[in-house]
Length: 80
Figure 1 (cartoon, rainbow, N blue to C red):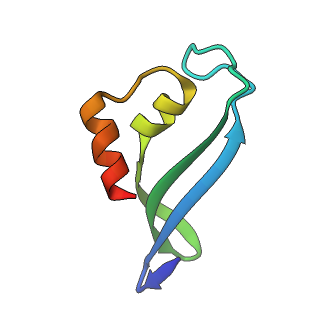
Figure 2: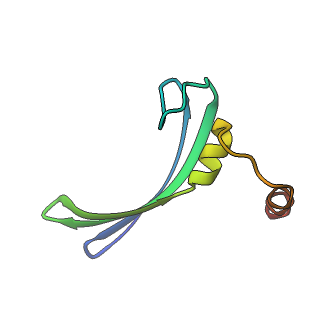
C-alpha cells in the first residue's frame, strides 16, 4: 500500500474456492487466485473515486472458461 496526498494505491492478491455461480458459470469447486491493483482518491476519510485493474484472463483460465494458446504458455514459462 502506498499513500500520497489524497491517493492510496494498493496491490491485492486473493485466493478463494469457486462455490457459487459466477456470470452464469456453475460452481466448479476449483481453488483460484487473482491479483488486482486499485487506486483510491480519499476526501474527508471517504473514497470518492476508484480506478482498478485485475487479471481477468487468468481468473477465467483458472475457472476453465478459457485456455492459453501454446504461444502464451511458452511466454508465461519464460517470465517465471
